[in-house]
Amino acid sequence: MHRDDIIIKKAIIHILDSSMGIPVLSDNELECGPDLYDFFRVHIEKITSGDDIKTCTFDEDSEVLTLLNTFESDFFVDVSKNLAADLYQIMNANIEIPAADLAIILFRHSEVDYLGLLKMNYKSSYTHYTNSASGENTNDIVRQKALLPSESQRLSEAAIINLETMEIFVLEKKYDIGGVKTNYLSSLFLKCHGPLSSKAKINIVAKAIEQVNNKYFDEDDIKRKMEVKKVLYDGFEASGGLDIENVKEKLFEDKEDMKQEFEEKIEKYQIEEEIIKPQNPQTMKKYVRQFLKTDTGIEISIPMEVYNDSESIEFMTNPDGSISVILKNIGKLTSQF
Image (cartoon, rainbow, N blue to C red; front, side):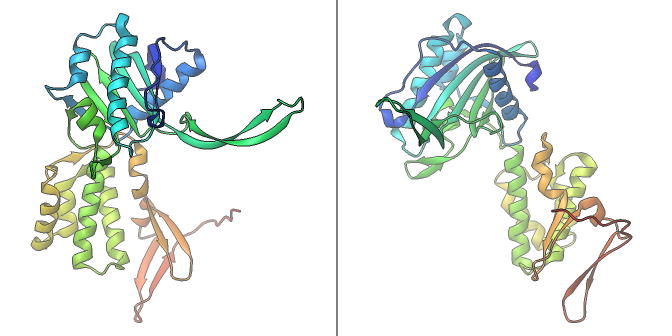
């Protein structure tokens, strides 16, 4: 969703601070001016454009689904208070879940109404404070422990609900629930389920490749690591997605034992036949360059298109086992401070 296409209709904020013992629920909507509208639009855009978001479906026994099935904008405040109170009960029973303000936004995008649940976890920082009780100003610096994330920060927990289809976009983090790391937002509060996010799938594939490589190759085999990065980059460049079957064939070729181990590591996630297509360029940022560091402290950053060009760079293994990196056809060198 692009921020300019988001029309905010209603908004409210509820304080869910576990240390207070009870939630502080608002009885009135926010009076949003242009700055606050922009603040919410930016966060909604960031949430929906990220590759760590999951597209989920409500379970049949979801209380949130029951509440929203009869939702009408006239009852926005009451519905928001019910949602906030239910979430607070879960937070209050599990101290690992961070305190937050819950912003609930009713907005329209592409002729469809959505309900946004933005859990704005508190940040700590410092600000000035003036005490003039004695007739003289005394300026001090105090620590604020309940600051909200700024526009430049991306929320780690949120849900965007399509009020027509009841499809949910969920952004969440795991916290300790009864001794087990749990996605409480989807499993306990929303009661919904869905496939892994694109980012999670890419991380699973990368981790599986790393584990197989570490078993069959030396952990310090720099050429193998660069080869893996090249295969992943080439795959994205060719099709805009990560074809897992194609990656497996290119990386492991005729090594059937390595292929089998790779398959075993990802089959439990049921993604072995997928083509993963991230929507945010930042997700693939770490694959667009080869980052190398020598034992002498020299750092080299090579754009992948240059790495693929033998007329620009060459790696040579010397008789003593050391590696030489040859940079070719350099027209100009610049120095930066």
